[in-house]
Image 1 (spheres, rainbow, N blue to C red):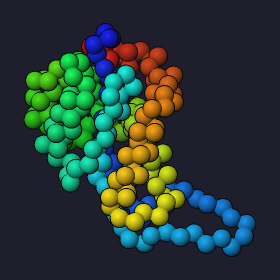
Image 2: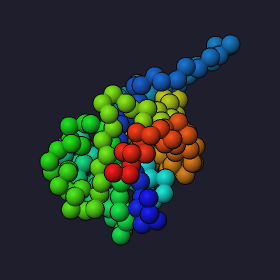
Image 3: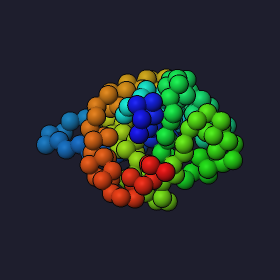
Length: 180
């Protein structure tokens, strides 16, 4: 891969305040204060270990929204050839998204079905949902702010991509997939 090429891992998630992804053990009767209001934020992220990662929020996950997210990523990484790894969500595979990618020098690499472990951004989402489950979220804006804060904290750490590379990049099929 040349210096002018960056790699990105795209995925979306919808963290919500009612998720209970973390267990907390107490040996005394310690009250846990939790907001019972349900807030959710449809969140798109592109994790780029050698470029500028982005995080954005959209109402929907339609093909037009995917194109808008790709456009933001192109703007964040001007003049770069982009290799984007993403899952097989129907909006990702749409003709509109493929045409947009081709027109903007983006190579799309679709992961095999049912293989979220091949996408390191999935681990970032998992960590964010776990973090959010312990917070008292006041409203949707507070939720979005906490997601942003945690996302950019996680992407500055190389642990996600290093773990992914150690586990998958040496596999011949991954190398072949990235080089084609």
